Length: 360
Ligand code: CP3
Figure 1: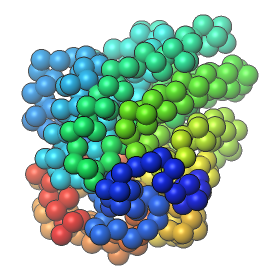
Figure 2: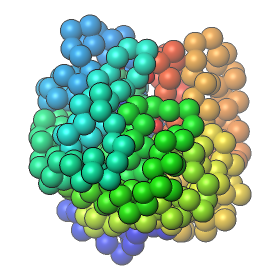
Figure 3: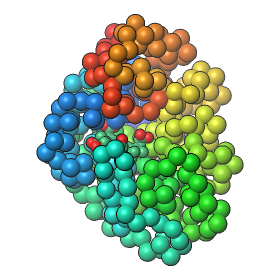
């Protein structure tokens, strides 16, 4: 539940414009002048502007070029007219600075040339403090982005959750079933917990530096958490997520998001979320009521990303928005978003239309 965000007041020393912004107001569970909306992965391949950058920059190169990353972030924010920016970066960069060589090949997604397969390989990972410091270009991109944003638009910093990052490290990339990850958890529980503890240290350093660089909220992506049972999540994942969320500086809202997590959302919320992200399979009203409603926690989500795919009639998109409103959205404590990242086949005009519908 909400980590005493209200008691903390403006402990982070935000400007009046940021403090009163629709996005941060709703993170605190209060009513805002307009319902805030942003889209996960809002800067990405569905946008011609982004594809233009990618024609001349590799993906990792782009993430490590502060001026380019800031421009991609700012352009998407402004073009869509959304209420928050999220820094252009990736959750996997920290695994690279911890010593796992990372590649993004088009089509195959991210891949590590070496996976973590034994306790010895866990212990051979790099120093977590150094790994976080080595993402200096990301923090510089945050500074440049904040300088370019309107005064009332927050920048969201982010990282992956310990479970999701450990799963990437063990699988060596994405996976359908995450069987190797669970095998590792069951066979080597002590090494698993050491791996997650080291990730927490590195991630805490990264979030603190993003906040120091001007981010006024953070989101932790536990994208593949849905592959665990509730019992395994409680034993192997939640303690580390909770430990990480607890390190975020006071007064900075923490958004915790997982996908395929309708069976885990109570636990995720309980890990110290000020805002919990619902995927599109999680029924908004009954789930939020169960968590205590807007007084206890804010909610972000949860339109189907496929509504934005090319060819969806505008009436269908409007019906989706109306349904979200009827399900209890748009009021105090609700941030409009998709249930997962925007897909690369999306129609940018539909994405922009969604923002107009929410604000209209
Ligand atoms: O939201 C934003 O605009 C900020 C940027 C952002 C990216 N990745 C940029 C990106 C964010 C917040 C992420 C988070 C991320 N990265 C997650 C969690 C979100 C989720 O979807 O659940 C995950 C699992 C990753 C790991 C990752 N990085 C994957 C699975 C991929 C996609 C591979 C593919 O080819 O589809 C990436 C690459 C990536 N990260 C791209 C972008 C814009 C596309 C890279 C390209 O330009 O080729």
